[in-house]
Image: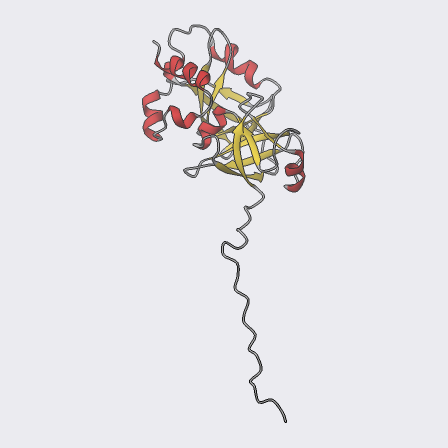
Length: 225
């Protein structure tokens, strides 16, 4: 006699709690301290460069916080984890990010050579400095270096007897260019006031990032007469 028991109903599999996490996009990287303190250079692992189809010396667009971005030259660092990027404190300041924050990196393609770049010093970093800022600071900094320059960025130049901070107030053409040997660098005009710069973007020492010694040096540079 046939068994009239109902057939067992298959129980749907219950997905495990905390299932697979969404994988971070390969171009989103955690900010790490730079070993090479150059304002124009960032470092990725060799594997990450290959994954993003980047080559040593390529220009990359880096997007940070507060809709800030900048252009740098990428190099490989064989001792760096694949999910990290090395940025020095000048680049971090321009991107409004700190160590441990996440930024995104994008191939930049061909960046045009600049026709003109207009650069002005920040007022409190040139107090007491005499002589020609172009010859002492800007010419050695840009000479044969093919550095990217992004309108609105700040950069620190070590030269003379103390570092001077400059702002890129304008570039031509576009918003970022490569400063080539035939690029005209203008540095005429009134220095940029620190207070105006800070009003535009409320940024403190904590946002600059870096170790205590570096912060102490920045404080000393900013605060001493």
